[in-house]
Amino acid sequence: MREQIAAAAAACRPPRAADTIAVVAVSKRQPDEAIAAAWNAGQRDFGENYVQQIAAKVERLDALAGIRWHLIGPLQSNKAAAAAHLCAWVHSIDRIKVARRLGAARTEAGADALDACVQVNLGDEASKSGVRAAETADLCSEVAGIDGLRLRGLMCMPEESASPELLRERFGQLRELKEDIQLRCGPLDTLSMGMSADFELAIEQGSTMVRIGSAIFGPRPE
Ligand SMILES: *Cc1c(COP(=O)(O)O)cnc(C)c1O
Image (cartoon, rainbow, N blue to C red; front, side, top):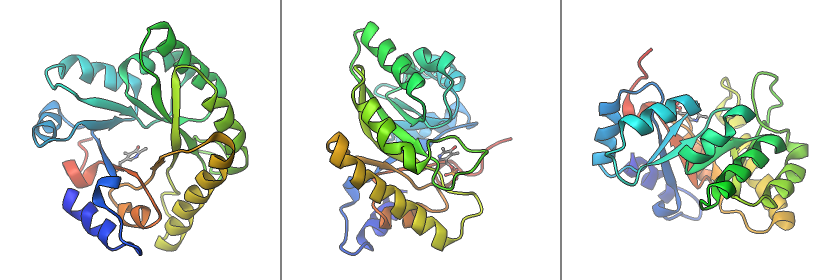
C-alpha cells in the first residue's frame, strides 16, 4: 500500500512527499489475525465504523502496543463518552452536541485532546451523515473552541456511484472548504479523504489521510 501511495504522491503536479499522507487501515469486519498481521508490518492506525467494535477490539488486541483507533462511522451522542476513551481520532463529527460530549469526556478523564475531523456531506445525500457544506464553517468554529478536542480538518465520503470526474470535484471541494475555514479557525492540517477505489484521486486533490480497507485486507468477510 505504501508503494501505491508513494506513486500517487509522486504523480501529483507538483509532486508530493509520500510521508505527508497517513494511512488508516480500515479493519471493519476483519478478523483479529488480520489486524495483528498489519500491526506486525508496522501499521498503527486502524479505522472502524462502530464504537462497540472498537471496544471489543481494544480489549482483545491490547497486546498490540501503540495502536491508534480511528472512528470513521457515524457517532450517536450516547456513545460519545466511550468513543472519547477508546479512540485517538474521530473523523465523523457532524453535530455540536456530539462534539461537546467528546470534549467533555476527554477533559474529565484528564486525557490529551482528541484529534477530530468534521465530516462534510458534499452531495447533500439524505442517507449520509455529515454536515452540509454551507454549514461547515460554523460547526468548525464551534468545534475549534471546545476543550478536550483538537480540530484537525475535514472528512468526506463521496457518493458511492460517483464517476472519476465527480470524485475529483468532491475531493477538490473539500480541499477548498478547508482553505476557507482556515481563515476563521486557524490552520488545519488534515483532509481525510480517499478509500481503496479512489485514493489516487484523493491524493491528487490534497488528501493527507487515506482510509483504506479492502486494498489492505482483501474483501471484507460478511
Ligand atoms: C469502509 C470504509 C472505508 C474503507 O473502504 P474500502 O473501500 O474498503 O477501502 C473508508 N472510510 C469509511 C468511512 C468506511 O466506512
